Length: 424
Image 1 (cartoon, helix red, strand yellow):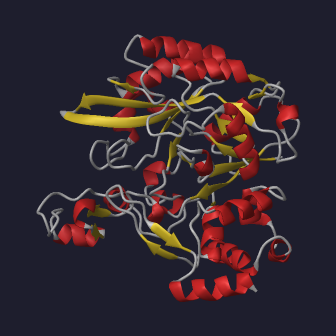
Image 2 (cartoon, one colour):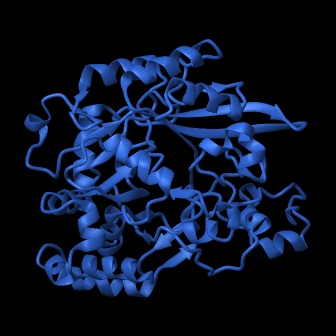
């Protein structure tokens, strides 16, 4: 059976996150998207963990599900299973530098969560934010996590983000060994993040034995699954949690089918630049300007593209043996909005989106459904938009220095033509 998995999300208790991030809503939106296994996010937050215990029950397969899940289905999608996960921000000094590294933790059960939370509560404040900020070295965090259970996973989150990541240009390290020390042998995966994709990471031979996972880091329901992982698991597996951990630890490319990716140029730290001055720069331009904004003379934020190039020991385009493939998408609502020539929050887009996902999950529509079948459900302009995304024929303005990039399915002159077709 194929499972689409999003390990990294947040709850309503995380800073700058939607109050609509509740378990009933997560369950419903995962079914709309086609996500069959979702991280709980934020298990370190006491109030959210209380809600986990209130709303979730053992599914009998090593994961959890909503209580009375069958009554909540409402004829939308497949059952959704939940896996206990959290993100922890570690801010500390190492090697004479301030380090800021975010980590994803997965746990096999609620008892393990309680052990981790007890240890972390003795170190810092886990009540103020769903993603706690702790003055804790990454190596020490790893010791706490694996002491709680050897079945946990610890995954560096959005590994290339400049400010808060293991390889971040502003606060990270040049290798996993430098960050995790004696615990590096327990680090089996990194999260590529929105501003990089697997092909960029393949340029580092040091990551050949590391699994590249992709997750949404969703702060709202709509962003669930904007990046995800696709696993093939046989139906007779009794413990899904252990099987997912095994696939990742063994880098089992027979069962890890592919990742679902943002186009990395859309990520808000893909290129170098200075947002206040509207300056976006390639790595070559940054080098020519010596990392200084030519307008205001302040330092550029060095983006992911540049940072990857600095640490890479391979040329672009090389595909290492044993790689996990990937597919890049644009969210369905954005395609509909462009096809109709209206904003993605408009009533017309919402109605068309809900009508479509009532017929098939979003990922099925974006990745799998034949064009002929799509054309029986939605206007030609939407079908053409999905075709453009599958073919990678897009118009992109890369993101930089905290500014998201802009991905357009249609060029301006194409947009008018497609809209006219939709009206017809």
